[in-house]
Length: 116
Image (cartoon, rainbow, N blue to C red; front, side, top):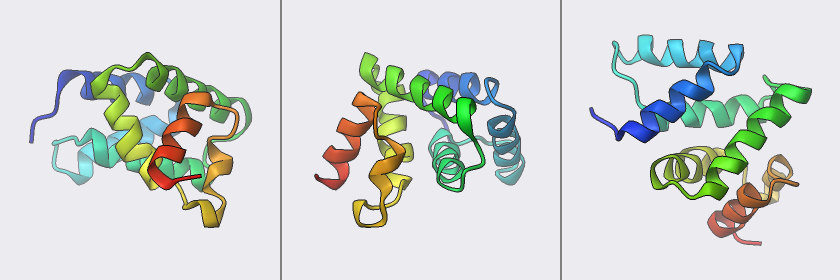
């Protein structure tokens, strides 16, 4: 399976910024027999946020990177964040909005996907 360069590059960049995300990245490559899917990996990143595998400044740094990238509007990375990260957060009825609160672009995308 091939993926646009921006999505692959952005995934690799993120993975090497955080030890916990690098582990998920390596597990994804292993699980898929050497084939890497940025969308499946980004869904795993969302789950790691929800499950609080990233804490404090590490979580704030990740969310800041995602927010800035989404705000820049690059289609590949923006689609990756909007589809695979945002859509894998809990529904508003389950408090999913708390994960994006304070991050303007992420919050706007979350509202676009799930409504107010």
